[in-house]
Length: 592
Ligand code: MSP
Image (cartoon, rainbow, N blue to C red):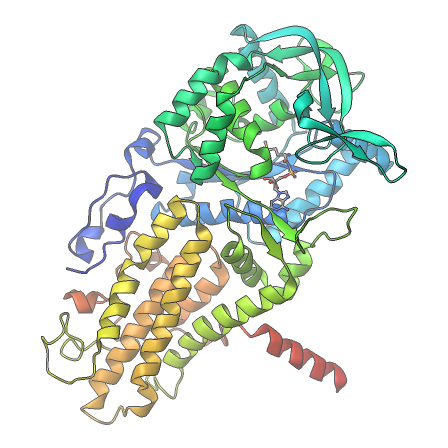
């Protein structure tokens, strides 16, 4: 039987052991929560990196946050209830980088932090990033957490004071071995040392610091990654970390002299030293769970981190090692993405090519820009941004294909009763040749049913592998196929008054609306407002929008369909207006 049990198709995204279920009914009451979830009562926490406040947010930062937001929203479609899924983001406010940026802007560091942190909060609110916590590392709750974490490492004999020397890169906030430093010719012809990887300037540092015995953790980290091949996703990043672990793993300096770095958390019991900003920043993932209060134990390690590839080493080596050192497990999963470039170049203030995400949200709408970034952003490699690409994609996929399909099937002319029409099993038998030989159903129609039936499973698979763009691509392919179905059967040529045409006309519309219902449900994590508009037009209630209950075309599979005969929701206008048309309209309007 082709019937798709979405639940049975969920697969590893939930870490659940699920099997294909024979009918929709069985879906109800089944739990998609897997063994690892059950330990923590079905809890999960998603995080974004916390963002540096040395400069205003750009589209790369928004991309990081949207990926986490989509993962989190997707999970909520499986496990409803605000209490089960947490999602934290925030700003990383300490360190030399911020100290220097504040000095350059002639501001007190706290003032710079307040200003830029507010910009991130405003952007995320505007972009529909539905976080449950926004942490600032300058908050007292975080200082408490860092101090406690430090004391635990100290008590466990993992910190000692020693002479640390090496190159320090303030922009990247990290020490670099000699091999990772090169000389770069400046504009005035003089050579200065820079980081080989980032190109940022480095300076020689020699000072007494607290050192964390990172070298002790090489084998435990290798074991963790070998035992859990999905710990770091996509797979090439997992492999990269294992390769790093094949090399030597030197101990790590985890403090700086306060005379050098005063903008940070003082080392407990030794205020001549300031806690290294990366240790400070990483602990935010515990702070948001209530650490060190015991309540955090009911959440850790349910956390999955979304991070950019540039901060992989900090999250996949330093952080798990620090956690193991503190007697805690590594995070549940680390999802890694690549970067957005502009005309093939890295975005930077000095190049003047930074794309402002707020103006993109204004220009392309919130859902439009969310869709663009998540549809075009490929975690495995960098993606190039340009405006024409956004207009082309949104016009073709959201305005024409999806919006056009909804418009066609709900328009008064085709659907004068404004209902979810009845499905006629004799017109569209579950197996070719079973029903009355009307000769209207074609092989492509069965292919469409098969494709949309398996769509939720495909989407689950892609979310699990952190390939959200592939999930959206799969939806888009099915939207195109559904348009083909409507085009093929040209319902506008059929007559509601004709007893021969009417059941078939209803069936064509019913199938198309069922497809739209699946698309709307699956698009919720990426385009929440647009999906709400679509589902409301189809009269799908709030309790019918989850993935547990999602069952495509039940009438085809011999099940009752709760939507059949229902009055459609109100027509609230175009689902997604074409961008280039609205531009034309704007030009015309400005001329008159
Ligand atoms: N503060 C650290 C993270 C600490 S997490 C404990 C940091 N901040 S950041 O502001 O520089 O970067 C935050 C995130 O934005 C990172 O995941 C980074 O990869 C991402 N991006 C920065 N530039 C980007 C692009 N051009 N494109 C996509 N993401 C980018 O690192």
